[in-house]
Image (cartoon, rainbow, N blue to C red):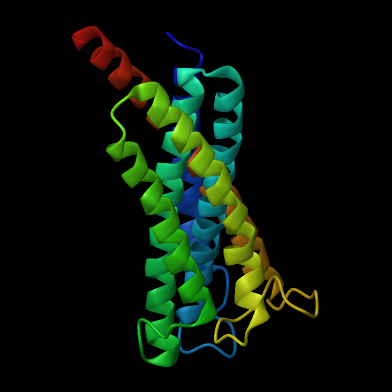
Length: 226
């Protein structure tokens, strides 16, 4: 049995307990923040972590792509593809949770706020990554082109996630990263948010490990068929 399998199994159960505690704490330990409608501030415990994981996943894809161009290893191509797919998934979740928050706070799921606009561009950029992979038949050429695209795509991530949304006035609250460099939330909220960030980061590691193993098996079987 591979050493990665027990790691994934152990991590799965740790995450099950950890995220269960975070969900409980998000609704019963941390109070609803003042200045937000009803209980809408509780979305931050899930929205911020999924947005963070999307950024982390795109970084992993970029690093794996750089490694692929150096090593030409199929394993690195698999890591890059899996990381990008998870990044796209979590970016969609960030968009959905953000839209729910927008509906509660501002009466509309979509307001073309700078944050909403920038994440739309990010989704399109990484959707094009998979369109590129689907359009190229030759495995080596596909992997090389995808690696270059992934690296170039990640150059846009810091600007679309951190810079562009802060250049213009935004409806989006800046409770963690802001011009005043102060954390604008209570200690209980901050504790739960940090715990959630750790939990969702762990969830990404688990999904990434399992998905890489599945994709490796799929490609091996595909090669056997050919």
